[in-house]
Figure 1 (tube, rainbow, N blue to C red):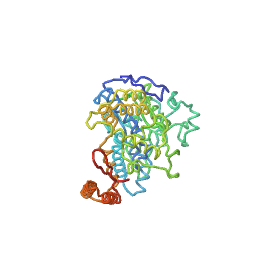
Figure 2: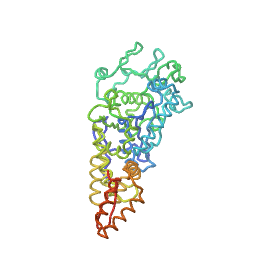
Figure 3: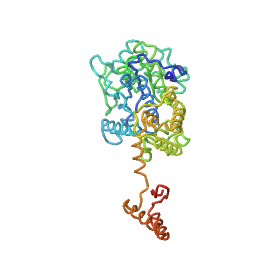
Figure 4: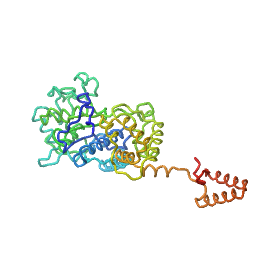
Length: 452
């Protein structure tokens, strides 16, 4: 097999992927903040990194790959939405996380190896690494300071800050929404721990009752579950700065490592019908809304039609084309095959998840009549013919007559034609057509279908 090559946002180059330990390949991807139904833009990293997870399992063995995707269940948006709905924060996060799992399962995504909740890693007790211990280490190492009930990361203490974003401190400060606070040493310093307001969740800490800053959770969970340095960290391109930049700062300064992850991967932005998705524009689309009209496999293929690093334009036309393509693939695939991908498809994916090339390879398989290879490839990629066929059946137009009556009328029409009573045969055809049934006469006899 061709060597796996991945584009690294940190080095700005596409390099051969060499895991730290081939027997334990480790990947972390930023997951959802569970305050509302996930939108279609959230589906892109889910599908992209599910595809990478499948590829890594194929190359290194399923038992040798660990995929961690977190759930953020402590956040200002969560607090506000729970108060707005008059329910507890736990009720909101449980309900929203359940909805997220339903949505991504319908998109054909595998469950990650581990799916930690942020609240489980704030204060774990004992020697287990958690967010409180991470902050304590940063203070002890001179990279964080306490001020006015807050603990902040001291950006000036890290000369390499900005390496992922490739921007200077002045550029980052100008482009960021910097919170002005009198207790900050520097304008770019960011919160590691803050006091909780009345009614908000709070945890005990050496700095008083409070809760962690958003960036802190991923540093703590990834280190606790994957180690101080791991193989791949992924997420949307919008997370490069400040979220991923701050993760790197926290983790490398806490553990004294040069890197947090060896490879950083980011998927591109998503637009809807050529415009940025926005509630004010009326084009804000949730995954659930898409799944109400399309099977998850069609949405999955539409999402993979563009290379993951490129922007994608989410359109009705794109979904229609994906539906047509997927139907043609399933029609040409064998009904029984193992989930084993064709070599050409694996080579395409090994080239930094080159999904346009992958799709071209699948078209080639279909054209060459490789029914079993096509079926195995589609199964490997997460496409499910039973789900697709069930969707088609549910939405198929229905005849206005019972099947038994349709078959009786067809037999009567055939009898009339044998007797050369063509007027009666035509009358029966017209009766069936009025009921939404189209007849097709061929060498093998008469078949029927529901008219669209």
